[in-house]
Length: 365
Image (cartoon, rainbow, N blue to C red; front, top):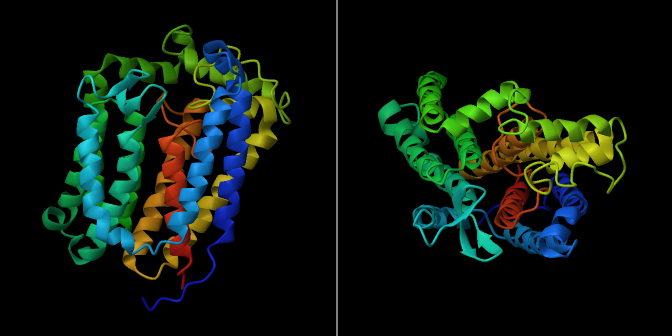
């Protein structure tokens, strides 16, 4: 295709694999008690995480060697399939309810989350759409509204499940792509105010969201109800101190902290590995985001640059929300920590996305 291809960015590969390794270890440490109680097998979640990690690494190295321009041809089809899955999952009897949200398709313990596919599908579609129509993006009606409308429709379908955390990541990554493509900050500011009003409406429409917000402001108002998760998370982080209680020595995983292997795994990391362990995880994410943005800046064309911005934005927003919830900065919302939390479709798709980012880094100028 006329582009000089070099080796992929090792500073993206190494942090990703280190985070993945930490994740496999910590999933076992955080879930062993829960897995033995529920399944009679303390290795249950470890086995699943290892399988999905291997599949994800294979997918990462596959997409790393597929020219990113291939995704340009399939962007529209991929988005259509993602929308179809988001609609199908809402059908009673087909979509599986877990954690209070109808967000899964599958049988038994194995399933996929269509909203996870939508995140990468939306990134590819918007990158293609905006790279082809970049001159129009400064126009509100013809340039900005179409991508925002598509993003808003996807967000609306995800909220019907409901899954505010994944919806927030989708919106955050999409807005970064739209802003990077040249959208006017004034237009986005006006829409931001509309978004805040809409968020207030969502809170009013569902009382449990209001409880989560009030619990976030003062979790001790309802320590056994809406504030329970936040309090137990802080109880895990506090005793960790500088070096932690030691790997496998968490106390909160003994049925105190809900979802210790998924949404609140960073609490267990802080409890067992302390400030040093938590800082190491954050440092690895920082390196990954830095090199991802470097790949976006040095990308050979606008399409590649926008994809890189979207992927690294998706990772960064998800990390910020997850850790913000864990340390009590944000209201509780169900969202995993990339590469570390137990998960199937979320882990494999995140690694697949990093593979696309690595392919873009191979053509850096």
